[in-house]
Length: 320
Image (cartoon, rainbow, N blue to C red; front, side, top):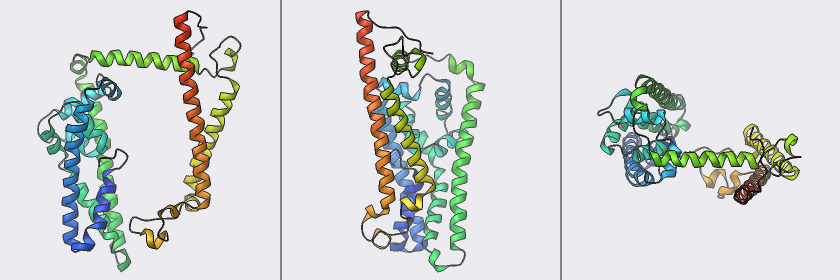
């Protein structure tokens, strides 16, 4: 839960694989559900109170989430409502774990209200735990694999429905209370930060101008070698993504969550990547280097732009 890229589903499934074999099947399901739900609540508190509230003091973070936007004001209005309203539950249950909890901390919302609104997620935790535990009994045959797929599909459907419903409730609240929300005081520090960001974006566009028609008159048009660097990087990135997607079994050894490294990968976890996969990853890494070269070049060019403007020697170009 503490790693932003890791979804709650993965944590619930892992618990369902690890606990039941040691304490019994049905007892293990109950214990795994309780542990996973407890970890969810603990992570919520840490992410909101320790991470979110501390990050809320940073202007850049408040600007990043858009505290002055109509959407976030609508979210705040929904989450500030006491109790367990449907809109509030949909946002807290359907939203991604880390971003949702951290955002509630940045907004300085009541942590106990957030825990109450999140509590229905125990239904999803139970369904995912069931699906994972049933996978342990697939080898027995019968209906276990069908039940596992059904419960996992049901849990996924509930999460997806919650996410869609949260988008609806946010939009509905934004429209119904539009005037009230827009009349709320603005975060002036965020407004100032956004103006600086907009200026940085304008300069970035200016100094990375791609148009060949402006290369004759502009010192800030993109040189041919940088265009080639970006073109090669983009081509390599696209090629590796397609290769990994459509030829995944060639690039990687199939590995299920119920498999073991000893049995499936001969005791070496790096064997999950085949020789072909290693080539694909190497080509992808080269495309990342292309991007890094471009970003470093653009940063240096932007610095030169500001220096020229201060000296009054800047050559103006079109930003169209």
